[in-house]
Structure formats: C-alpha cells, structure tokens
Image (cartoon, rainbow, N blue to C red):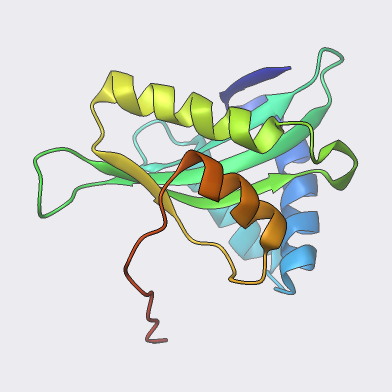
Length: 146
C-alpha cells in the first residue's frame, strides 16, 4: 500500500469514497460542494489537502482530508484532520492508523505543533484506535451554525 498526497489523477476515486463517506455520515452534500472541496485539495497553495491510500493495483482504499492552519498559542501550525474514511471492505487492516502516522511524519518534517481531530462519541471502532495513538482532549466542541 502507498500513502501519498492526492493529486489530479485521484479525483474520481476520491469522489467515489467521499460520496460513500457522506452517506455513512448521513450527510447530503451537493455535487457543487464536493467539487469545491476537491478544488481546494488540488490547489498547491491551499491549506486544505488530502492523503490517499492506494493498493499495489492502483485501487484507492481510503482518504484523509486535512487542513493546516496557524495557532494563536504558538508560532507553529496545527493540522486538523477533518475527514478520515477507509472503504468498508478494507477496514480493520491498519490503514487508518498508517494514514495518521504518515500525516504525523509529515507534520514532524514541517514542524507542526500537533494533529487533532473530532469523532462521534458513539464511534467505538475509531475511538479504540484513537485511544491507542493519541490522547483525548479535555475540551468539548461547540458549534454555532451561521
């Protein structure tokens, strides 16, 4: 398996996985919004990026969307893992953990301060992994829809 930064050739595979992810999350995202997200990922100077995990035959197994941004308590940047999705037939094989490790290695090279992410309290499988590789934040997330 290869984990790498997504590029123009990954559009269709990413979009297919993205649509399945949105369905799994119970979120309806329009084609226009999905394409806008991809355009952000594809632009080299944008802070939104994606990793893809691809098997030896070229099949895309997973994606990880992330945003690198400044932090007011440090001169180093943070990386927010926005979305992480592994195709259902490839789960429980260490792909998610490998993708996070790959991103963490990039963060070390770029001197980011930390990676962070959210997950649903009821997502026991994801939380089992996250509890092994990271520490749970003491903070609660609040949302104010605009």
